[in-house]
Image 1 (tube, rainbow, N blue to C red):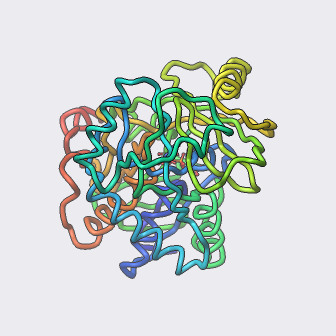
Image 2 (cartoon, rainbow, N blue to C red):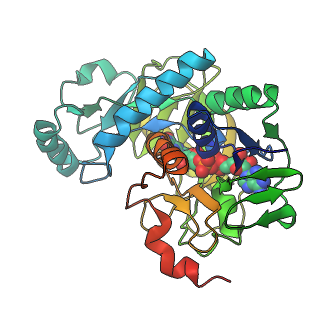
Length: 353
Ligand SMILES: Cc1cc2nc3c(=O)[nH]c(=O)nc-3n(C[C@H](O)[C@H](O)[C@H](O)COP(=O)(O)OP(=O)(O)OC[C@H]3O[C@@H](n4cnc5c(N)ncnc54)[C@H](O)[C@@H]3O)c2cc1C
């Protein structure tokens, strides 16, 4: 069987890259092992343009956001699903210093930050002492729905192979790759945290981290905002809310923990006045990088082998822009954005044999 490209992994990276390549008229085969708790299946899907204690805009957000919304919108219409939920964020200030910083930044980032929240509306629902700010131009992306629907579409078209990728069955030359009976011009690994064990790319500076979340029913909480106060409470499927999440850089398993549940419930009880019921708890691992920039591009020694990975905690905002960029690189040879291009690690990758 002949195809243009093989893609390994169908998280948000594999999904959007395959979609972009097919939009360019290319043929794609996607190989994905159906793992239950991948990053994309556990993520809340929030796009938040302004983050951190310094209340600053995320890297490249003014370019990433319009591209993300346009691409999710186009895919939604094509697949007849709703994947963009335009919820605003209510940011409960943790202290006066943060409130002052937020208020000052609101005069600069007028598209994103607002100080117009009527706090009296929220006093019956939350305990808080320092006021509430509002962040707009935000969205919650239903990654699960996107991945599941795209998977069905690939499967129906005979373009999905559901199996663990078998590296011993891959043959690589500079001009083409062969995997079992499939021959393609290039292969791109979109294998998320699997990248740390991928011999072509494991040498790259990944900085993976574990995150846990709770799924809860909170019947009296309005479903048109994401609420932030250390914890994040975001509307989820089946009338549930997603509550999380932790960031652990040192861990010896990817299981859920009693410690996370106890700590999160304690924080929740101190903040939320409404009754809730915990329905589930999940854990996964974010494929993050040391310099907080994605890994995009082709191996300097094996030009037919590429990577699209390293989205960290920002898969929803970053992936559309870089999926389009990588697809155009593959089809037209246009350069990938310098800060994301793995050419920045040419020296490291060239040491491999
Ligand atoms: C708790 C938590 C909360 C998060 N919240 C947010 C958020 O609010 N907003 C946001 O933007 N991002 C968030 N993220 C980050 C986001 O989930 C990731 O950036 C993104 O999902 C990474 O996508 P990916 O396609 O690289 O990896 P993944 O989603 O992990 O997908 C990789 C795919 O590759 C497949 N695969 C791997 N190895 C193989 C193999 N050998 N053979 C076959 N298939 C293979 C896997 O089965 C999987 O389908 C969160 C992550 C976590 C864990």
